[in-house]
Length: 356
Image (cartoon, rainbow, N blue to C red; front, side, top):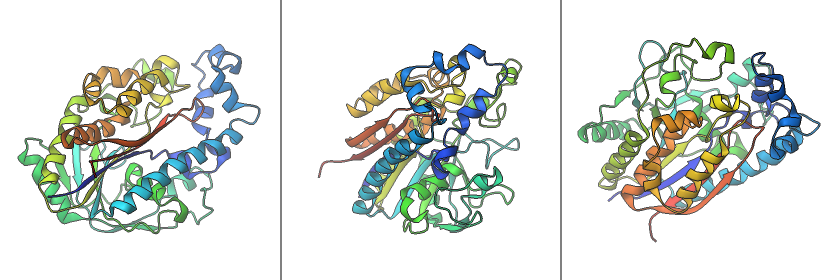
């Protein structure tokens, strides 16, 4: 019988940069000429947003935000080490990195061999330093588990989920940052270089109707009105069911597995109703309260339209995890919710385990 640990964490890209750059997404948004000036005026912002922005553009608050995120990540790493998994399975969004116009699978099991990646290259491309002051081209090795990846794909196919699978990333594509940053941040003190566990990523098409339309990310308001929407991504309920099916297959297998949902929660640049200025904190709080109470049924009431309206697209990774934990009867043994208005997204950390 396989033992399973559940973890939820963030892969927030600005955490890899320095404090003075952590609010750069908001700065980019404030430069959008189609957002009304009164919306961009700090005098109109909520108290939390004004206090974080302060008179230094968020730099001091970034240090405090980083400390909160590092605390959550350290707790997750400690639980991971105590569990000592054979493999870490990571649900992460692709965000127009590996899959583009040629093909966009709803789910893809990445049964990769070991590979070297360069996590700081995207920062270097924007002229931004990394938080560790490491060389821009510094690599680390992501250990793969291709045989377990094959088993996972086979188990999901047998359960009726027509997942794609891949044995090698496209040569022209980067390793998705959702997966790369999961290793980087769980090994924060060593910049990802001392992470001993193999990883099987499962890419989820979280961005759905916007994966190609918005290139999986940010867009100016002037471009929204005429955007050509894509087909929808998998629904929250489908992600929940896939997580449950995977947990059932792994429960009957021989491996010790850590199942990880990797994403922040609502993203400001996806919340159209808030002019892309801040995340949808009320929607996030509601789901967090249900998570903390182990009320997984409440998550099943969330629709795809709800997710899009709240900018919670990347939380489809967490719906996979919720389905797995519900199937196993695992409740959260610890969790933490980190709120912010200036730093693009609220973050959640959680540990799920069965009775000991």
